[in-house]
Length: 160
Image (cartoon, rainbow, N blue to C red; front, side, top):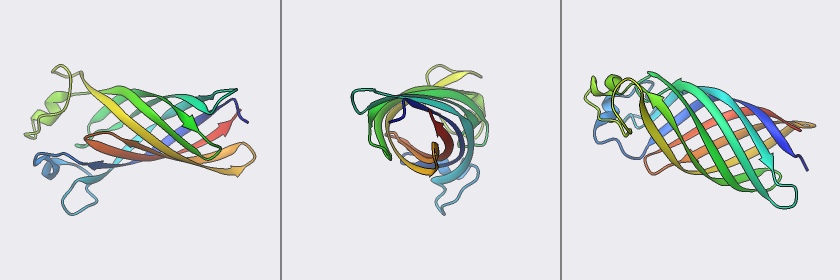
């Protein structure tokens, strides 16, 4: 069993459960009503697997675009349980964005604080599917679900 993994993360599909009419202002819309968008997200992650149990701990840092294609920077941490190919855990973290960008489109963002460096909290669960490619090399479908959005991305990683 691997002790941990390192992965590079990319892509991004986000579905908004809640939009209060703001979907009309979202960028890179995929669905007709605008709640599903393709947004650029990239980053890195490290996961540590429990040696005597099926627990895992993960930390992921990321940059990319929010729903109106403006820059974000953030991190999430996860504690969960895993098998060889599936991870399920509780996620918490945050990202920083410029709140003024949203307010300029008539959208009031879910954030803590105001201004050019407002913090958007992330609290939810993740369900990830890991597919081994060759030896310790894998790809992973990362799925984060919060009460407001879901985000789906891919990673390419290496177990160690």
